[in-house]
Image 1 (tube, rainbow, N blue to C red):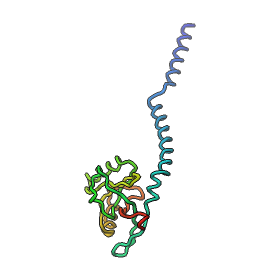
Image 2: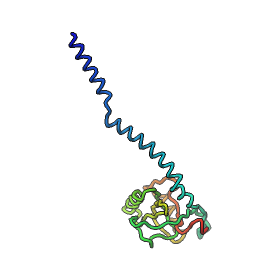
Image 3: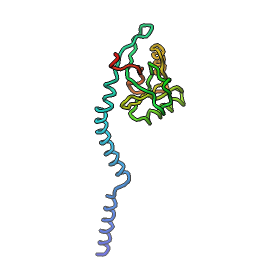
Image 4: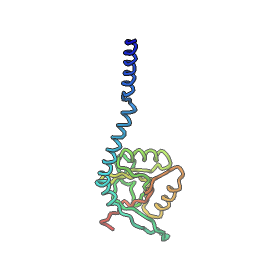
Length: 177
């Protein structure tokens, strides 16, 4: 009887001990919580620093099309990236932007998906910070850019978060206002 009690207590102890054992799922949850907290803090610092400067440098203004329509245009000096699918000649004054990213990889990835689909002329441009914009198409005049912007907004297969899409004036900066 006493041996049986000792064995039962031992089994109960082992079962209780094994139920406290950490699992891969517990580790994953703890890791994701830690990364989430760190990423949020890092993003706040980055947002207020480098990428906050990008937003400060980008200026919004109204440009009139040939028919008198007012078109909102954002201005930022940019250059075409080497691995972004374009050449310097691809970049014109008015650009219909469909993506904006902090990492070049993400911008190039979106550009590749667009180029394989309905936007074969898409390319990536970058600011000096760097901050990356995916351009669906580039134009020399505001009328064509506005028309294309309307097409992109009406396209059923593309969902974008505000402020996308928008027209970017690649020659504009606050200095030449």
